[in-house]
Image 1 (cartoon, rainbow, N blue to C red):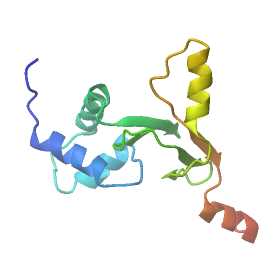
Image 2: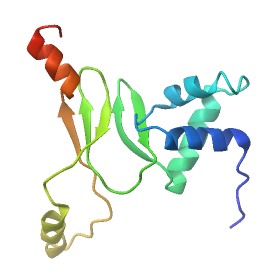
Image 3: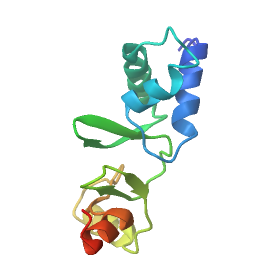
Amino acid sequence: MAKRNFSSKRNAIYNTICSTLTHPSAKWVYEKLKPEIPDLSLGTVYRNIALFKNEGKVNVICSINGEERIDADTKPHPHFACNVCGKISDVKDSNTAYSENRELENAGYTVESRYVIYYGLCPECSKKRADGTL
């Protein structure tokens, strides 16, 4: 397989995704990079994210308001998505996948990946709701 040309725009897009914990959308990445790369198009960002997904360099976590949210940390780990503000956070999960995977494997399934996403209110939105400001 021929080595792909890793353009400066592609490199900037990937580095922007890797440098944030916000689990960004393509639009977020575009808005971050547009000031420093004036000829960048949103289409270029989408095409490169699709390439990164196909190469296994990023994962799609979920879709919030019609926008895919991505993560450069491709190791299995759970997320929490706020139903109010749309923030996505990495979270710890006390439930172990081991027992679930063992049960599935005993039934003849082969587990290749596992995604856990909790939905609800983040701490900031929970506090606002409790304060009556939400």
